[in-house]
Image (tube, rainbow, N blue to C red; front, side):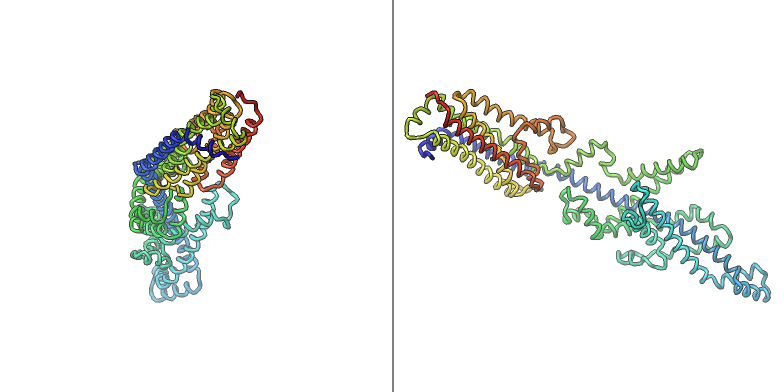
Amino acid sequence: MFSKALFKQSLKANGIMWLIITFAVCFMLSCVMLISGTSTISEVKSSVSDTIIKEVIESNIKKNEISMYNMATIGEAKFDEYFVLELNNTLTEKRENPEFLAKVATKMAGGMNQEEAISATIAEEMTEIVTTTYTNAINDLTNYISDASLVQAKKANNDDTLTKESDEYKEIYKQFYGSVMVTINPNGACDDTYTNNNEALPDDYDIESLIQKALINKANEYINSSERMEYRSNRAIYSTSILVAANITSEEAMAKLLNILKDYGVTLMKYMSFGYNYDNVKRMSEKAIKVYITEYNDEIAHLDPTLTVEERNKKIEEINDSIILEIAGTLLDKLPNEVSDAIEEIGRMDLYALIVGSIFFKIAGLLLPIIYMIMVSNSLIVGQVDSGSMAYVLSTSTKRRSVTFTQSIFMISSLFVMFLLTTITSFICFAIVDVDTDLTYGKLALINLGAFLVLFAMSGINFFTSCIFDRSKRSMAIGGGLSIFFLVATMLGLFGSKVIPSVVRIKALNNFNYVSIISLFNVVNILDGKAGFIPGLIILLVIGLAGYIAGSIIFKKKDLPL
Protein backbone atom coordinates (compact mmCIF):
# COMPACT_ATOMS: atom_id res chain seq x y z
CA MET A 1 0.00 0.00 0.00
CA PHE A 2 2.94 2.33 0.75
CA SER A 3 5.26 3.02 -2.19
CA LYS A 4 8.83 3.84 -1.22
CA ALA A 5 9.67 4.86 -4.76
CA LEU A 6 6.80 7.30 -4.95
CA PHE A 7 7.65 8.70 -1.51
CA LYS A 8 11.28 9.26 -2.57
CA GLN A 9 10.06 10.93 -5.77
CA SER A 10 7.86 13.33 -3.78
CA LEU A 11 10.69 13.99 -1.35
CA LYS A 12 13.09 14.75 -4.18
CA ALA A 13 10.59 17.04 -5.90
CA ASN A 14 9.60 19.00 -2.78
CA GLY A 15 12.53 18.57 -0.40
CA ILE A 16 14.33 21.80 -1.25
CA MET A 17 11.16 23.87 -0.86
CA TRP A 18 10.46 22.13 2.47
CA LEU A 19 13.95 22.90 3.75
CA ILE A 20 13.76 26.55 2.74
CA ILE A 21 10.32 27.12 4.25
CA THR A 22 11.11 25.18 7.43
CA PHE A 23 14.32 27.17 7.91
CA ALA A 24 12.48 30.43 7.25
CA VAL A 25 9.72 29.60 9.75
CA CYS A 26 12.19 28.56 12.45
CA PHE A 27 14.30 31.66 11.79
CA MET A 28 11.29 33.97 12.06
CA LEU A 29 10.14 32.20 15.21
CA SER A 30 13.60 32.65 16.75
CA CYS A 31 13.59 36.35 15.91
CA VAL A 32 10.10 36.86 17.31
CA MET A 33 10.74 35.00 20.57
CA LEU A 34 14.21 36.40 21.23
CA ILE A 35 13.53 39.98 20.21
CA SER A 36 10.17 40.27 22.00
CA GLY A 37 11.68 38.54 25.03
CA THR A 38 14.58 40.96 25.33
CA SER A 39 13.00 44.16 24.04
CA THR A 40 11.12 46.86 25.89
CA ILE A 41 7.82 45.01 25.44
CA SER A 42 8.24 43.19 28.75
CA GLU A 43 9.46 46.38 30.40
CA VAL A 44 6.44 48.34 29.16
CA LYS A 45 4.04 45.67 30.35
CA SER A 46 5.87 45.40 33.66
CA SER A 47 5.90 49.18 34.12
CA VAL A 48 2.19 49.51 33.40
CA SER A 49 1.43 46.54 35.62
CA ASP A 50 3.59 47.82 38.49
CA THR A 51 2.06 51.29 38.23
CA ILE A 52 -1.45 49.87 38.45
CA ILE A 53 -0.47 47.57 41.32
CA LYS A 54 1.08 50.39 43.35
CA GLU A 55 -1.90 52.62 42.63
CA VAL A 56 -4.26 49.90 43.87
CA ILE A 57 -2.22 49.26 47.03
CA GLU A 58 -1.73 52.93 47.89
CA SER A 59 -5.37 53.68 47.15
CA ASN A 60 -6.35 50.89 49.52
CA ILE A 61 -4.07 52.29 52.23
CA LYS A 62 -5.31 55.87 51.87
CA LYS A 63 -8.98 54.93 51.68
CA ASN A 64 -8.62 52.78 54.80
CA GLU A 65 -6.93 55.62 56.64
CA ILE A 66 -9.57 58.20 55.68
CA SER A 67 -12.38 55.80 56.52
CA MET A 68 -10.91 54.84 59.90
CA TYR A 69 -10.08 58.45 60.75
CA ASN A 70 -13.66 59.54 60.07
CA MET A 71 -15.01 56.63 62.08
CA ALA A 72 -12.63 57.41 64.95
CA THR A 73 -13.51 61.11 65.12
CA ILE A 74 -17.24 60.34 64.91
CA GLY A 75 -16.81 57.82 67.72
CA GLU A 76 -14.82 60.25 69.85
CA ALA A 77 -17.44 62.97 69.42
CA LYS A 78 -20.19 60.52 70.34
CA PHE A 79 -18.23 59.35 73.37
CA ASP A 80 -17.87 62.96 74.55
CA GLU A 81 -21.62 63.45 74.22
CA TYR A 82 -22.41 60.20 75.99
CA PHE A 83 -19.91 60.89 78.75
CA VAL A 84 -21.38 64.32 79.49
CA LEU A 85 -24.92 62.91 79.33
CA GLU A 86 -24.09 60.00 81.62
CA LEU A 87 -22.19 62.30 83.97
CA ASN A 88 -25.19 64.61 84.31
CA ASN A 89 -27.48 61.63 84.83
CA THR A 90 -25.17 60.19 87.48
CA LEU A 91 -24.86 63.52 89.25
CA THR A 92 -28.64 63.95 89.20
CA GLU A 93 -29.10 60.48 90.69
CA LYS A 94 -26.47 61.23 93.32
CA ARG A 95 -28.12 64.46 94.37
CA GLU A 96 -31.33 62.52 94.94
CA ASN A 97 -29.63 59.69 96.82
CA PRO A 98 -30.40 59.68 100.59
CA GLU A 99 -26.82 58.78 101.53
CA PHE A 100 -25.50 61.61 99.39
CA LEU A 101 -27.97 64.05 100.91
CA ALA A 102 -26.97 62.93 104.38
CA LYS A 103 -23.33 63.70 103.67
CA VAL A 104 -24.30 67.11 102.35
CA ALA A 105 -26.33 67.80 105.47
CA THR A 106 -23.40 66.82 107.68
CA LYS A 107 -21.13 69.27 105.87
CA MET A 108 -23.69 72.00 106.07
CA ALA A 109 -23.93 71.40 109.81
CA GLY A 110 -20.17 71.87 109.95
CA GLY A 111 -20.49 75.38 108.54
CA MET A 112 -20.61 74.98 104.75
CA ASN A 113 -23.34 76.45 102.62
CA GLN A 114 -25.40 74.12 100.46
CA GLU A 115 -23.45 74.67 97.24
CA GLU A 116 -20.12 74.15 98.97
CA ALA A 117 -21.41 71.03 100.70
CA ILE A 118 -22.70 69.52 97.44
CA SER A 119 -19.42 70.29 95.61
CA ALA A 120 -17.36 68.79 98.43
CA THR A 121 -19.45 65.64 98.53
CA ILE A 122 -19.28 65.25 94.75
CA ALA A 123 -15.50 65.66 94.96
CA GLU A 124 -15.33 62.89 97.57
CA GLU A 125 -17.33 60.51 95.36
CA MET A 126 -15.90 61.66 92.03
CA THR A 127 -13.86 58.49 91.49
CA GLU A 128 -16.95 56.34 91.74
CA ILE A 129 -18.98 58.81 89.64
CA VAL A 130 -16.36 58.91 86.88
CA THR A 131 -16.00 55.13 86.83
CA THR A 132 -19.74 54.63 86.46
CA THR A 133 -20.00 57.41 83.88
CA TYR A 134 -17.09 56.08 81.86
CA THR A 135 -18.50 52.54 81.79
CA ASN A 136 -21.96 53.70 80.80
CA ALA A 137 -20.56 56.01 78.10
CA ILE A 138 -18.53 53.16 76.57
CA ASN A 139 -21.63 50.95 76.57
CA ASP A 140 -23.66 53.70 74.93
CA LEU A 141 -20.92 54.18 72.34
CA THR A 142 -20.78 50.45 71.57
CA ASN A 143 -24.53 50.39 70.97
CA TYR A 144 -24.25 53.45 68.74
CA ILE A 145 -21.46 51.85 66.67
CA SER A 146 -23.53 48.70 66.29
CA ASP A 147 -26.59 50.58 65.04
CA ALA A 148 -24.60 52.95 62.83
CA SER A 149 -22.70 50.03 61.27
CA LEU A 150 -25.97 48.38 60.27
CA VAL A 151 -27.18 51.62 58.66
CA GLN A 152 -23.90 51.93 56.74
CA ALA A 153 -24.04 48.29 55.64
CA LYS A 154 -27.57 48.73 54.28
CA LYS A 155 -26.61 51.93 52.48
CA ALA A 156 -23.35 50.57 51.05
CA ASN A 157 -25.02 47.42 49.74
CA ASN A 158 -28.35 49.07 48.88
CA ASP A 159 -30.10 46.34 50.83
CA ASP A 160 -32.55 47.20 53.61
CA THR A 161 -32.96 43.54 54.53
CA LEU A 162 -29.47 43.22 55.99
CA THR A 163 -29.27 42.29 59.67
CA LYS A 164 -26.54 42.22 62.27
CA GLU A 165 -25.96 38.60 61.35
CA SER A 166 -24.81 39.52 57.84
CA ASP A 167 -21.15 39.49 56.83
CA GLU A 168 -21.49 42.99 55.37
CA TYR A 169 -22.53 44.36 58.77
CA LYS A 170 -19.82 42.44 60.65
CA GLU A 171 -17.10 43.80 58.37
CA ILE A 172 -18.15 47.43 58.85
CA TYR A 173 -18.71 46.98 62.59
CA LYS A 174 -15.26 45.45 63.00
CA GLN A 175 -13.61 48.41 61.29
CA PHE A 176 -15.76 51.03 63.05
CA TYR A 177 -15.44 49.53 66.52
CA GLY A 178 -11.72 48.88 66.12
CA SER A 179 -10.83 52.38 64.94
CA VAL A 180 -12.85 54.04 67.74
CA MET A 181 -11.64 51.82 70.54
CA VAL A 182 -7.98 52.02 69.53
CA THR A 183 -8.29 55.81 69.47
CA ILE A 184 -10.03 56.16 72.85
CA ASN A 185 -8.22 53.12 74.29
CA PRO A 186 -10.54 52.77 77.31
CA ASN A 187 -8.60 51.61 80.37
CA GLY A 188 -5.72 50.50 78.14
CA ALA A 189 -7.84 47.85 76.42
CA CYS A 190 -6.00 48.37 73.12
CA ASP A 191 -2.46 48.77 74.46
CA ASP A 192 -1.35 45.73 72.40
CA THR A 193 -2.01 47.58 69.15
CA TYR A 194 0.64 50.11 70.15
CA THR A 195 3.17 47.94 71.99
CA ASN A 196 3.14 45.17 69.35
CA ASN A 197 4.20 47.76 66.79
CA ASN A 198 6.78 49.44 69.05
CA GLU A 199 4.69 52.59 69.32
CA ALA A 200 4.34 54.82 72.36
CA LEU A 201 1.10 54.43 74.28
CA PRO A 202 -1.15 57.46 73.95
CA ASP A 203 -2.09 59.47 77.04
CA ASP A 204 -5.36 58.51 78.70
CA TYR A 205 -8.32 59.94 76.85
CA ASP A 206 -9.04 63.44 78.21
CA ILE A 207 -12.16 63.25 80.32
CA GLU A 208 -10.96 65.78 82.88
CA SER A 209 -11.81 68.68 80.57
CA LEU A 210 -15.25 67.20 79.98
CA ILE A 211 -15.87 66.90 83.72
CA GLN A 212 -14.74 70.45 84.42
CA LYS A 213 -16.94 71.87 81.65
CA ALA A 214 -19.88 69.70 82.66
CA LEU A 215 -19.71 70.94 86.26
CA ILE A 216 -20.13 74.52 85.04
CA ASN A 217 -22.73 73.61 82.40
CA LYS A 218 -20.48 74.40 79.42
CA ALA A 219 -19.80 70.85 78.24
CA ASN A 220 -21.86 70.99 75.05
CA GLU A 221 -20.13 74.16 73.89
CA TYR A 222 -16.75 72.65 74.67
CA ILE A 223 -17.48 69.38 72.80
CA ASN A 224 -18.15 71.34 69.59
CA SER A 225 -15.31 73.81 70.06
CA SER A 226 -12.33 73.93 67.68
CA GLU A 227 -10.05 73.14 70.60
CA ARG A 228 -11.80 69.84 71.37
CA MET A 229 -12.20 68.91 67.70
CA GLU A 230 -8.48 69.45 67.15
CA TYR A 231 -7.72 67.24 70.16
CA ARG A 232 -9.92 64.45 68.80
CA SER A 233 -8.45 64.87 65.33
CA ASN A 234 -4.81 64.65 66.45
CA ARG A 235 -5.55 61.62 68.59
CA ALA A 236 -7.35 59.91 65.69
CA ILE A 237 -4.49 60.62 63.26
CA TYR A 238 -1.97 59.00 65.61
CA SER A 239 -4.03 55.92 66.42
CA THR A 240 -5.60 55.18 63.04
CA SER A 241 -2.32 55.50 61.12
CA ILE A 242 -0.87 52.84 63.46
CA LEU A 243 -3.97 50.68 63.08
CA VAL A 244 -3.98 50.93 59.28
CA ALA A 245 -0.26 50.16 59.06
CA ALA A 246 -0.68 47.15 61.35
CA ASN A 247 -3.69 45.87 59.44
CA ILE A 248 -2.25 46.38 55.94
CA THR A 249 0.99 44.61 56.81
CA SER A 250 -0.71 41.69 58.56
CA GLU A 251 -0.56 38.26 56.91
CA GLU A 252 -4.35 38.13 56.52
CA ALA A 253 -4.52 41.52 54.79
CA MET A 254 -1.60 40.72 52.48
CA ALA A 255 -3.25 37.42 51.51
CA LYS A 256 -6.46 39.26 50.56
CA LEU A 257 -4.54 41.91 48.63
CA LEU A 258 -2.49 39.32 46.74
CA ASN A 259 -5.72 37.59 45.77
CA ILE A 260 -7.00 40.89 44.32
CA LEU A 261 -3.73 41.40 42.43
CA LYS A 262 -3.31 37.83 41.19
CA ASP A 263 -4.41 38.83 37.67
CA TYR A 264 -1.29 40.99 37.51
CA GLY A 265 0.97 38.09 38.44
CA VAL A 266 1.88 39.58 41.82
CA THR A 267 3.64 37.20 44.19
CA LEU A 268 4.45 37.79 47.85
CA MET A 269 8.08 38.42 46.93
CA LYS A 270 7.14 41.00 44.32
CA TYR A 271 4.71 42.65 46.73
CA MET A 272 7.40 42.92 49.40
CA SER A 273 9.78 44.48 46.84
CA PHE A 274 7.43 47.46 46.58
CA GLY A 275 8.41 48.47 50.11
CA TYR A 276 5.00 48.58 51.74
CA ASN A 277 6.30 47.78 55.20
CA TYR A 278 4.85 49.04 58.48
CA ASP A 279 6.84 52.30 58.65
CA ASN A 280 6.17 53.28 55.04
CA VAL A 281 2.47 52.50 55.30
CA LYS A 282 2.18 54.52 58.50
CA ARG A 283 3.91 57.55 56.94
CA MET A 284 1.69 57.28 53.87
CA SER A 285 -1.42 57.11 56.06
CA GLU A 286 -0.42 60.13 58.12
CA LYS A 287 0.37 62.19 55.05
CA ALA A 288 -2.88 61.23 53.31
CA ILE A 289 -5.09 62.04 56.28
CA LYS A 290 -3.42 65.39 56.94
CA VAL A 291 -3.95 66.43 53.33
CA TYR A 292 -7.54 65.20 53.56
CA ILE A 293 -8.23 67.20 56.73
CA THR A 294 -6.74 70.39 55.28
CA GLU A 295 -8.67 70.20 52.02
CA TYR A 296 -11.90 69.11 53.71
CA ASN A 297 -11.83 71.95 56.25
CA ASP A 298 -10.98 74.46 53.53
CA GLU A 299 -13.91 73.35 51.37
CA ILE A 300 -16.34 73.31 54.29
CA ALA A 301 -15.25 76.82 55.32
CA HIS A 302 -16.25 78.14 51.90
CA LEU A 303 -19.72 76.59 51.82
CA ASP A 304 -22.60 78.93 51.06
CA PRO A 305 -24.10 79.88 54.44
CA THR A 306 -27.55 80.26 52.89
CA LEU A 307 -27.84 76.54 52.12
CA THR A 308 -30.53 74.57 53.87
CA VAL A 309 -29.53 71.70 56.17
CA GLU A 310 -30.43 69.16 53.50
CA GLU A 311 -28.53 71.04 50.79
CA ARG A 312 -25.54 71.52 53.09
CA ASN A 313 -25.37 67.80 53.97
CA LYS A 314 -25.60 66.83 50.30
CA LYS A 315 -22.86 69.31 49.42
CA ILE A 316 -20.63 68.03 52.23
CA GLU A 317 -21.07 64.47 50.95
CA GLU A 318 -20.10 65.56 47.43
CA ILE A 319 -17.06 67.42 48.77
CA ASN A 320 -16.00 64.41 50.80
CA ASP A 321 -16.27 62.04 47.82
CA SER A 322 -14.39 64.46 45.60
CA ILE A 323 -11.52 64.86 48.05
CA ILE A 324 -11.26 61.11 48.63
CA LEU A 325 -11.10 60.54 44.85
CA GLU A 326 -8.40 63.18 44.53
CA ILE A 327 -6.27 61.85 47.39
CA ALA A 328 -6.98 58.13 47.40
CA GLY A 329 -8.31 57.46 43.92
CA THR A 330 -6.10 55.54 41.52
CA LEU A 331 -5.06 56.83 38.12
CA LEU A 332 -7.65 54.49 36.61
CA ASP A 333 -10.39 55.99 38.80
CA LYS A 334 -9.64 59.46 37.45
CA LEU A 335 -9.59 58.53 33.76
CA PRO A 336 -12.59 57.93 31.48
CA ASN A 337 -13.83 54.36 31.80
CA GLU A 338 -12.76 53.36 28.29
CA VAL A 339 -9.20 54.59 28.81
CA SER A 340 -8.83 53.14 32.31
CA ASP A 341 -10.18 49.78 31.15
CA ALA A 342 -7.69 49.71 28.30
CA ILE A 343 -4.74 50.53 30.58
CA GLU A 344 -5.88 47.90 33.06
CA GLU A 345 -6.13 45.35 30.24
CA ILE A 346 -2.57 46.08 29.15
CA GLY A 347 -1.40 45.73 32.73
CA ARG A 348 -2.99 42.30 32.99
CA MET A 349 -2.12 41.19 29.47
CA ASP A 350 0.73 38.78 28.84
CA LEU A 351 2.19 40.57 25.83
CA TYR A 352 4.93 38.00 25.22
CA ALA A 353 2.45 35.12 25.13
CA LEU A 354 0.17 37.23 22.89
CA ILE A 355 2.93 37.83 20.36
CA VAL A 356 4.20 34.25 20.33
CA GLY A 357 0.87 32.45 20.58
CA SER A 358 -1.85 34.54 18.99
CA ILE A 359 0.19 36.50 16.44
CA PHE A 360 2.98 34.18 15.31
CA PHE A 361 1.64 30.64 15.63
CA LYS A 362 -1.90 31.59 14.66
CA ILE A 363 -1.13 34.02 11.82
CA ALA A 364 2.42 34.96 10.80
CA GLY A 365 3.92 31.53 11.42
CA LEU A 366 1.22 29.85 9.31
CA LEU A 367 1.73 31.89 6.15
CA LEU A 368 4.77 30.09 4.67
CA PRO A 369 3.60 26.60 5.75
CA ILE A 370 0.22 27.29 4.09
CA ILE A 371 1.96 28.27 0.86
CA TYR A 372 4.06 25.10 1.04
CA MET A 373 1.00 22.99 1.81
CA ILE A 374 -1.03 24.44 -1.12
CA MET A 375 1.75 23.91 -3.63
CA VAL A 376 2.71 20.42 -2.48
CA SER A 377 -0.81 19.03 -2.02
CA ASN A 378 -1.61 20.09 -5.59
CA SER A 379 1.64 18.74 -7.05
CA LEU A 380 1.19 15.36 -5.38
CA ILE A 381 -2.03 14.40 -7.22
CA VAL A 382 -3.69 16.86 -9.58
CA GLY A 383 -0.37 18.31 -10.69
CA GLN A 384 0.73 14.93 -11.95
CA VAL A 385 -2.66 14.27 -13.54
CA ASP A 386 -2.54 17.65 -15.27
CA SER A 387 1.02 17.11 -16.55
CA GLY A 388 0.38 13.52 -17.58
CA SER A 389 2.99 11.99 -15.30
CA MET A 390 0.27 10.21 -13.34
CA ALA A 391 -0.27 7.94 -16.38
CA TYR A 392 3.35 6.83 -16.09
CA VAL A 393 2.98 6.17 -12.34
CA LEU A 394 -0.17 4.10 -12.77
CA SER A 395 1.27 2.21 -15.70
CA THR A 396 3.56 0.47 -13.25
CA SER A 397 2.39 -1.89 -10.54
CA THR A 398 1.49 1.09 -8.36
CA LYS A 399 -2.24 1.21 -7.61
CA ARG A 400 -4.35 4.34 -7.12
CA ARG A 401 -4.88 3.49 -3.45
CA SER A 402 -1.12 3.22 -3.03
CA VAL A 403 -0.65 6.60 -4.72
CA THR A 404 -3.09 8.46 -2.48
CA PHE A 405 -1.89 6.72 0.68
CA THR A 406 1.79 7.39 -0.04
CA GLN A 407 1.22 10.99 -1.08
CA SER A 408 -0.95 11.70 1.97
CA ILE A 409 1.74 10.18 4.20
CA PHE A 410 4.34 12.44 2.61
CA MET A 411 2.17 15.53 3.02
CA ILE A 412 1.32 14.81 6.67
CA SER A 413 4.82 13.70 7.67
CA SER A 414 6.47 16.73 6.06
CA LEU A 415 4.15 19.07 7.99
CA PHE A 416 4.65 17.08 11.19
CA VAL A 417 8.45 17.25 10.97
CA MET A 418 8.23 20.96 10.12
CA PHE A 419 6.29 21.69 13.31
CA LEU A 420 8.43 19.29 15.31
CA LEU A 421 11.36 21.52 14.40
CA THR A 422 9.41 24.68 15.28
CA THR A 423 8.65 23.09 18.65
CA ILE A 424 12.33 22.41 19.29
CA THR A 425 13.21 25.93 18.13
CA SER A 426 10.58 27.50 20.41
CA PHE A 427 11.86 25.47 23.38
CA ILE A 428 15.44 26.61 22.80
CA CYS A 429 14.44 30.26 22.43
CA PHE A 430 12.19 30.11 25.50
CA ALA A 431 15.11 28.74 27.52
CA ILE A 432 17.27 31.68 26.42
CA VAL A 433 14.87 34.57 27.10
CA ASP A 434 14.23 35.91 30.57
CA VAL A 435 10.71 37.28 30.50
CA ASP A 436 7.78 37.47 32.91
CA THR A 437 5.13 35.36 31.18
CA ASP A 438 2.53 32.68 31.84
CA LEU A 439 3.89 30.74 28.86
CA THR A 440 5.41 27.35 29.73
CA TYR A 441 7.08 24.54 27.80
CA GLY A 442 3.86 22.54 28.06
CA LYS A 443 1.81 25.38 26.64
CA LEU A 444 4.37 25.92 23.87
CA ALA A 445 4.07 22.24 22.92
CA LEU A 446 0.27 22.53 22.79
CA ILE A 447 0.48 25.69 20.68
CA ASN A 448 2.78 23.93 18.18
CA LEU A 449 0.40 20.97 18.15
CA GLY A 450 -2.53 23.29 17.48
CA ALA A 451 -0.67 25.00 14.60
CA PHE A 452 0.14 21.59 13.11
CA LEU A 453 -3.49 20.49 13.30
CA VAL A 454 -4.56 23.70 11.54
CA LEU A 455 -2.20 22.84 8.67
CA PHE A 456 -3.32 19.21 8.82
CA ALA A 457 -6.97 20.26 8.38
CA MET A 458 -6.12 22.65 5.54
CA SER A 459 -3.93 20.05 3.85
CA GLY A 460 -6.85 17.63 4.05
CA ILE A 461 -9.04 20.14 2.24
CA ASN A 462 -6.37 20.80 -0.40
CA PHE A 463 -5.68 17.09 -0.83
CA PHE A 464 -9.40 16.57 -1.32
CA THR A 465 -9.59 19.22 -4.07
CA SER A 466 -6.41 17.80 -5.60
CA CYS A 467 -8.10 14.41 -5.88
CA ILE A 468 -11.37 15.80 -7.28
CA PHE A 469 -10.12 18.03 -10.09
CA ASP A 470 -8.10 17.20 -13.16
CA ARG A 471 -6.62 20.66 -13.55
CA SER A 472 -4.20 22.26 -11.09
CA LYS A 473 -5.64 25.73 -11.53
CA ARG A 474 -9.08 24.58 -10.38
CA SER A 475 -7.75 22.63 -7.43
CA MET A 476 -5.53 25.48 -6.33
CA ALA A 477 -8.31 28.02 -6.83
CA ILE A 478 -10.67 26.13 -4.51
CA GLY A 479 -8.35 24.53 -1.95
CA GLY A 480 -5.70 27.23 -1.99
CA GLY A 481 -8.29 30.00 -2.13
CA LEU A 482 -10.06 28.65 0.94
CA SER A 483 -6.77 28.33 2.84
CA ILE A 484 -5.74 31.91 2.08
CA PHE A 485 -9.25 33.11 2.93
CA PHE A 486 -9.04 31.37 6.33
CA LEU A 487 -5.71 33.07 7.03
CA VAL A 488 -6.87 36.55 5.98
CA ALA A 489 -10.11 36.16 7.94
CA THR A 490 -8.07 35.23 11.01
CA MET A 491 -5.86 38.29 10.55
CA LEU A 492 -8.91 40.55 10.44
CA GLY A 493 -10.63 38.68 13.23
CA LEU A 494 -7.61 39.19 15.49
CA PHE A 495 -8.37 42.91 15.69
CA GLY A 496 -11.86 42.15 16.94
CA SER A 497 -10.89 39.46 19.43
CA LYS A 498 -10.33 39.84 23.17
CA VAL A 499 -6.57 39.39 22.85
CA ILE A 500 -6.41 42.95 21.51
CA PRO A 501 -6.81 45.78 24.09
CA SER A 502 -10.26 47.35 23.95
CA VAL A 503 -8.82 50.77 23.09
CA VAL A 504 -7.84 49.49 19.60
CA ARG A 505 -10.30 46.60 19.32
CA ILE A 506 -12.86 46.74 16.50
CA LYS A 507 -15.62 44.42 17.68
CA ALA A 508 -17.24 44.08 14.23
CA LEU A 509 -14.08 42.40 12.92
CA ASN A 510 -14.60 39.55 15.37
CA ASN A 511 -17.20 38.16 12.94
CA PHE A 512 -14.36 37.03 10.68
CA ASN A 513 -13.34 34.52 13.34
CA TYR A 514 -16.59 32.64 12.75
CA VAL A 515 -15.74 31.91 9.10
CA SER A 516 -12.21 30.61 9.63
CA ILE A 517 -11.29 27.10 10.76
CA ILE A 518 -8.11 28.61 12.26
CA SER A 519 -10.38 29.96 15.03
CA LEU A 520 -10.78 26.36 16.19
CA PHE A 521 -7.17 26.70 17.34
CA ASN A 522 -7.93 28.46 20.66
CA VAL A 523 -4.60 29.89 21.83
CA VAL A 524 -6.23 31.91 24.63
CA ASN A 525 -7.58 28.78 26.34
CA ILE A 526 -4.19 27.11 26.06
CA LEU A 527 -2.46 30.10 27.66
CA ASP A 528 -5.12 30.29 30.39
CA GLY A 529 -4.68 26.60 31.16
CA LYS A 530 -8.29 25.80 30.29
CA ALA A 531 -9.44 22.65 28.50
CA GLY A 532 -11.71 24.57 26.10
CA PHE A 533 -9.15 24.26 23.29
CA ILE A 534 -9.50 20.45 23.06
CA PRO A 535 -12.83 20.26 21.11
CA GLY A 536 -11.47 22.67 18.49
CA LEU A 537 -8.33 20.59 17.94
CA ILE A 538 -10.44 17.45 17.64
CA ILE A 539 -12.58 19.11 14.96
CA LEU A 540 -9.45 20.15 13.05
CA LEU A 541 -8.22 16.55 13.22
CA VAL A 542 -11.56 15.28 11.93
CA ILE A 543 -11.59 17.81 9.05
CA GLY A 544 -8.12 16.75 7.99
CA LEU A 545 -8.88 13.02 8.16
CA ALA A 546 -12.15 13.51 6.29
CA GLY A 547 -10.35 15.40 3.53
CA TYR A 548 -7.68 12.76 3.06
CA ILE A 549 -10.09 9.81 3.22
CA ALA A 550 -12.73 11.36 0.96
CA GLY A 551 -10.10 12.49 -1.51
CA SER A 552 -8.57 9.01 -1.66
CA ILE A 553 -11.96 7.37 -2.28
CA ILE A 554 -12.89 9.83 -5.03
CA PHE A 555 -9.50 9.50 -6.75
CA LYS A 556 -9.76 5.73 -6.71
CA LYS A 557 -13.17 5.75 -8.46
CA LYS A 558 -12.85 8.71 -10.86
CA ASP A 559 -12.00 8.53 -14.55
CA LEU A 560 -8.60 10.04 -15.27
CA PRO A 561 -7.65 11.78 -18.53
CA LEU A 562 -4.64 9.52 -19.03
